[in-house]
Amino acid sequence: HPRQPLQPNTPQSCLGIMGGGQLGRMFAHAAQSLGYRVAVLEPEAGCPAAQVAEHHVGTGYEDPDGLAALSALSRHVTTEFENVPADSLKALAMRGFVAPAGDCVSIAQDRLVEKHFFTRCGAQTGVYPAPHWGIADQKDVASASETLFPGILKTVRMGYDGKGQVRVRDREELAAAFAAMRGQVCVLEKMLPLAYEVSVLTARGVDGAAEVYPIAENVHRDGILFTTLVPSPHVSPDVAEKAQKAALDIIGELGYVGVLCIEFFVLQDGSLVVNEMAPRPHNSGHYTIDACVTSQFEQQVRTLAQLPLGDVRQHSPAAMLNLLGDVWFEPDSEIAREPAWDKVLALPGANLHLYGKAEARRARKMGHITFVAATLAEAQLALAQACDILG
Ligand code: ADP
Ligand code: MG
Image 1 (tube, rainbow, N blue to C red):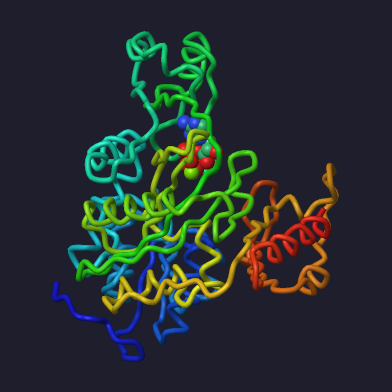
Image 2 (cartoon, rainbow, N blue to C red):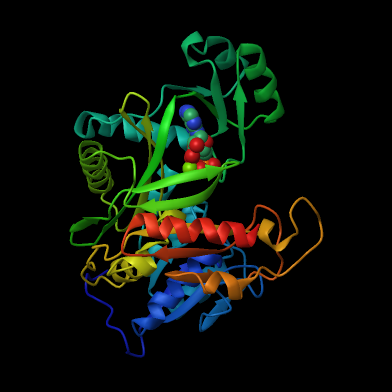
């Protein structure tokens, strides 16, 4: 397929996306703002992205008719979720331009393949994944090194937000945890002494030009992202530079086109460990909408349309708070309530983003707020006040 930009504002200027969640919705906002129409393929009616997109193909992700319909609407297709069937991306690539490519997405879909890839990049990046061991059967349970305990057993596929993970203190607990996984292939990772966690957002165009955003520092609660602070309060210039360089090496080595987010651990001794990557915009990059010249979603649009990458400069310190369904309930109770948005919106520097999900459920991502300010401390103060208001 010819490498030529899909200009906005023409009869052909429609961008396609696999998946209809909040990442697809924010992609659509960015695409529309640049003068593109958007087609979403997602089985669920009324999903966050379909609420705002011009076209909705309501089939399963593997439905040949659905994929053909999406291709007919748009010759440029991307994905908003990691577990999109790689074969569907490959089928779409027969009829148009797909970014990221199915091959890159399949690496990110399997923790073991991903770790092998990171290990291979290690010679160049100087950054390696946590010590680990693939667990496919009882033999692997028996042969796992004693040095991997205490560890975390993770399913290699389909895990997210801490789901599909069990902490194991010893081999006996490993055997029990693996049995409970009912035959799913897993990876045992050594539990590392984390000082803090960061992520690095990168983008790369078809021409091979790549950009890297500032380091974001992430705090998780119960395995789900809780807040992101940028600039990172803890990272040293050395570690920041090493992580950003590793991220650029990784995106280049993949020959990746699109937005890629890489999570790292910083250990108590200051060393850097690469954890996992997401082949799409990432929750920890939502701050870019309000605090950077070019948001991660606009960057996804630009890479998909084969336009030049946008400016990744951050113009304001930012503190992002995820809004989970929990804040739609009275504390420690099942009594539903509407959060006091009027009070939250009165806080300085508040940018509220709600995803249009009909039903609030605990632990479900419903929206986020990014506080921007002249200093990170001010943004953090507003975030703390929002937490008080939201209970
Ligand atoms: P997910 O796909 O659910 O985000 P992760 O591998 O990122 O899975 O794990 C979720 C969280 O669990 C991490 O952000 C980190 O806080 C913790 N964690 C994961 N692996 C390790 C490890 N090897 N050592 C210590 N903490 C870990
Ligand atoms: Mg993670």
